[in-house]
Length: 368
Image (cartoon, rainbow, N blue to C red):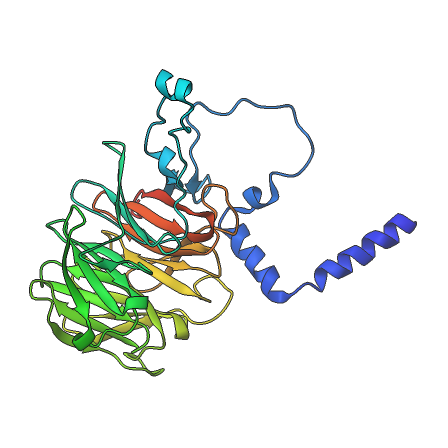
């Protein structure tokens, strides 16, 4: 009898839990990630051998999979092979040549024409260039007397030039494919706090989101001269409140995550407001801290939410399709995600900041 009363008290306590927490749990459950969160808790069963090629996909069966987990990059040994300690090292007593290097707090992310994965790390003040084919890692930390301080956003043009935003230095830096500094944008250009960027090759544009002036700055990709500014601070359509992320779609339209208003705004190539979707809230399709955004070949919007620890996928009209992620450190879970990028092969790269890794997924297509 006493045990039954204690159970009733416990159930009433659970029912009084914070409504937001309950909604977020439902959010995770609908996404099909609840078994991961609960560790498949339940009646103990005899061990079952794992499948030969296990796959982590979303949504769960019997639904048709749309997103598949591929791999994660967390440190240099996820790319480079470990070196053997030579007999000379052993005799002389040299230190172990294998030094682990964690990718601490990755942020912006992109790829180049050689399929190298390029991402910034704010904690290490470094841009890493990962070549998985050659199993090498390059690093950009500065050049010509300029040292990166808070590299945040990164984009790559068709010539493999690398553009890096450094908000602490109020500038955008352009490096060649080997990490040599070619030019800077800042100072007279009015750059205050550049965050994420995007490139429109067809229109020769470099889009730079500046969260402190609440605008998208549009530069000529060749001359790096400021040509246009989009938006101002405000709550109306076409106005921003601390924007962060930006992406250009197949048709040249661009989308901006407006973190302060917890929404995404979409503009035409001639800078006209098209639509807004999302609002502040804890339900599917809403946002708390939207950060990075990417657009796939079908025109779907992939939006990272640092508070939900997931990314949500919206259709071309802004309708919610599905979402992936929850808090955690297993594959497919996140701890303060920030940047997202989709390459031509529809691989999806997400920077998982406090797990100090980049997670890579495959978009399998939304059509039947």
